[in-house]
Length: 257
Image (cartoon, rainbow, N blue to C red):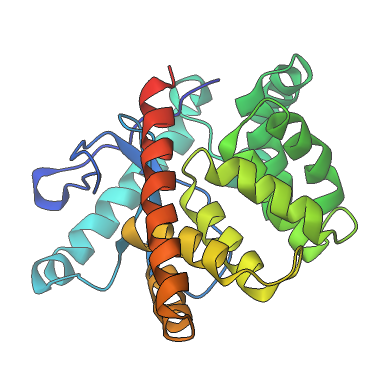
């Protein structure tokens, strides 16, 4: 699987993994929503975590104009050089770049899971859901965690395929077992609402608890609301199960090459 380059960070704005402290992180695909947070994936420990955007201080507000000028200069230079070979592929712009899209389609047809996911995500972001679906499914078949998550969203919302809550549950589970933060959150909601199975407060609490521990604020909110509706025995069982499951996820990440 192609591993995207870690995003660079400056001393003034270092983004560190909340789990291992590594700065080798990159933005990760997350569900569409209203949260003012960005989900990142650590390239060292492979875990997801979230960083809020509400902590901007005056220093960044003052530096905003300079930063904007720098970004515009970079874009202008990129357009002048037209050198796509040295630029990391971004799914948002692939469909607008015939050369990149052609290369991506070739790699995807040859079974490259990352290319299949990137191609599927590019179609997804253009609302071309039926084109996105087969590529996401192909990447998910190769245990690509983000493809499994996005495929779960496709089944959950009936985009590119018929709505199927059981299939959504299956793919969210596969992705969550690889510690995908948003998949853990969605899995908790499915168990809470009983869409694919009868409502299961303990299973819902388990996944919301794990997602909350990794920085997902919505998971934290819904976990605490759910806890208030659980008996002491249910809560204790769910917390114990959370501890055991989280340990297994950590072991799986450590063992993963």
